[in-house]
Amino acid sequence: MRIAMVSEHASPLAALGGVDAGGQNVYVARLTEELAKRGHDVTVYTRRDASDLPDRVPLPGGAVVEHVPAGPPVPVPKDELFAHMPAFGAHLARAFGRERPDVVHAHFWMSGMASQIGAGPHGIPLVQTFHALGTVKRRHQGMRDTSPYERIGIERQLGRGCARVLATCTDEVVELGDMGVPPRQVSVVPCGVDAEHFHPAADTGRTPERRLRHRLLACGRLVPRKGYDQAVRALAHIPDTELLIAGGPPAGAVEAEPEARRLTGIAHRAGVADRVRLLGAVDPDDMPALLRSSDLVLCTPVYEPFGIVPLEAMACGVPVLATDVGGHRDSVADGITGRLVAPQNPCAVADAARELLADERLRRQYGRNGRERVLRHYTWARVADGVEQVYRLTRSEDAMTTEVAS
Image: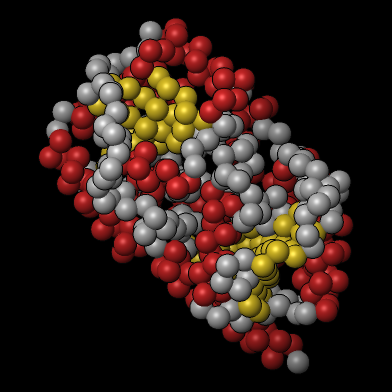
């Protein structure tokens, strides 16, 4: 099958940890890799954000990344890319005219907009994954939402007009329904995790660290919606415990990051500054060992479209304490692989953390359960199985529609 992946701001080649580089980049990269491994012809179309980038970059396994000229060839915040999507779409239309894909899979709403422009003239079926919905973002961020005004209207039109929406969790199906997208048009396939890279094997040959009795870890992009402030506030009620926060710019520059300064201020006011460490960006090769070094991984965002960190922790055999939002409701089995607590409630986080830290046997059981759950449901091979089924369904529906029309 010839597959066009469109990911306008989230390149599979990007370094992770920046404001606009996170789970979507991982999803596109790993799904592309898995599909190419199965013999599919996959091209990822992403925006050129540097003048010295080659037009096409081969990926291990046979896929290709094509850099699309749309807007200036410099980094641009994703919320400022909207004006450049017609140019992106025109490029896709030309590319699809030269070599027609069997299906186009758009990632994020602006990719969907560009993909409609590119695929429409050629009658190519479009699968849309939003990764995050504007209605949810605006509900939680209000006036702090920097998305273009047009976002929600375009998302509604995309959801109703594409061949199929590929949602990453059941909570998203409900949100899409409220937008007028019928459930029969939506398929749920979760995100995945590399269960060979993230694994529970003991770390050998390492010098033991000097540390407090317990360690909590939070990781991901260093942005307010990730809710690290809730973890910092909770720490004031969790004695003899340290909190590590991994993410953002490199360690030497993290103190200058606005969110890092805000968290440091909260830690000082809460009296826990000596127990909070901002690690900055962590090399992906070092992440499994860091996860395994923790007693409990905290995932405390106000909202989370899916959330890959819980899967990485579970794959490493580490229990997860997460807010009861979005994709966490699917991935974290409450009372089996970890705990779910109400969002924006540091007291609930502290209560659950103290209970889990006091029971090592329960933590170990949660860790084993988490690893088993990942292997059953969340490997990239499992994800690719589901996505392939969606592509085949979309192509068969398109063929039936074409036959009826003729």
